[in-house]
Length: 237
Figure 1 (cartoon, rainbow, N blue to C red):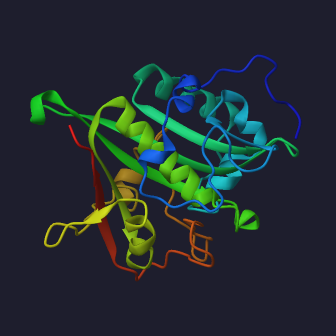
Figure 2 (cartoon, rainbow, N blue to C red):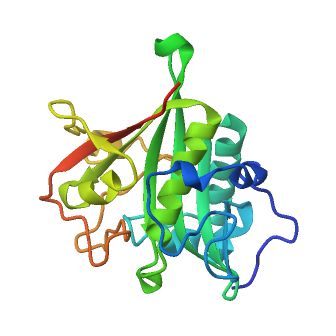
């Protein structure tokens, strides 16, 4: 790919990833891998960079959901907003042979008044290019951001997933809480009145037959009719 910025900026400090202890995770890697040693010399786990617009980051996200015609200017504006807030930790896996982003997941920090003004993490936008199956990369990217949440002091980490992915996340330490695990949503991008007022924040309705993927489980796609559950990972204080 061409056009990558000569001087690039990380979304967050990449040294944070070197401080994570993957032996703390209940996930089983065979062979053992980590963010620092992802299993192949040409794989690199790191924070998102502003130059990743040219490394196919948005194209990768389109395997998860509809992205839309995001221009370079809009991408860089959103990147700067996320970096300035200090609450977004978008983490990617790069195939350095191809200069291409092939995996990603986001940790979003929620600042609370409860629990003595604690912070909570949310796992969002997990996707791995399906041509890289068998390298444990889905497990690696989820464990990376989960350990990062713990390192940053989150009291818990939550995510929403389809029923068919519950066992996968349970293997990584997440727990489905009986009676408190339903996911409910109200959408604002489907009302004509709202559509007329959307500008830079417009998020189009997902296209029919768009590939959806948390490609951490081979062959799994997210169908509209699937149930969605909330699972959490509690961190000991």
